[in-house]
Image 1 (cartoon, rainbow, N blue to C red):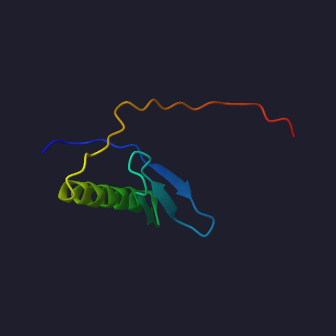
Image 2 (image 1 turned 135 degrees about the horizontal axis):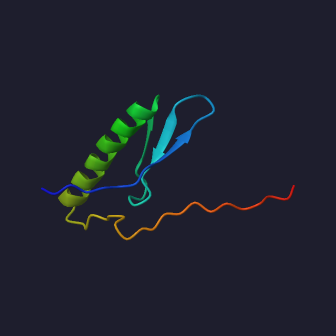
Length: 77
C-alpha cells in the first residue's frame, strides 16, 4: 500500500469548530471541534472514501497535479 497525500481546507464556523473539505475528493467533507480533531476526522473521511472507491472498482483521484496559489487583490469599497 502506498501513501497518498491530499490537500484539505479547514473553514472556521461561526458556532465553533471547523468544516473540512477535501477538494480532490468530490463530496468528502467532515467536521472537527478543534484543528487537530478536524485533521484526524479528515484522515478518517479520506480513508473511508478511498475504501469505498476501491470496493466499487473506481479510480482513486489524487491532487498531485494541482497547483495552489494565494492571490491578493485590492478591494475598493
